[in-house]
Image 1 (tube, one colour):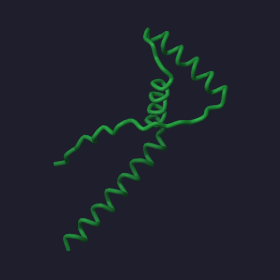
Image 2: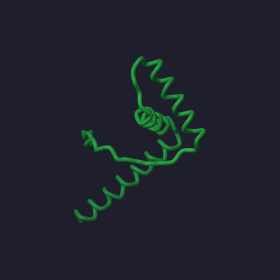
Image 3: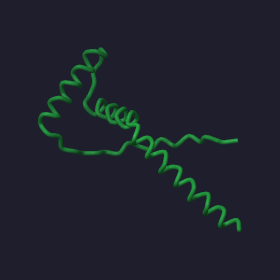
Length: 86
């Protein structure tokens, strides 16, 4: 039986970055678009978080790399347990 434990929700971490002016203007327009089409007030931070999460979740190469990295961590953990049991 495999148990899938839920990861604890970590508190948000602040990330500051400088955008090129053209990217900031485009982000502002996109925020206005999302606000208009959703019918509610939206802030750039909220939109940027959703965009980053969507981008990373939809990147197949990244997901594959992440899966391989997790498997290698699991395998190294298993080998440490086996050594401890010997």
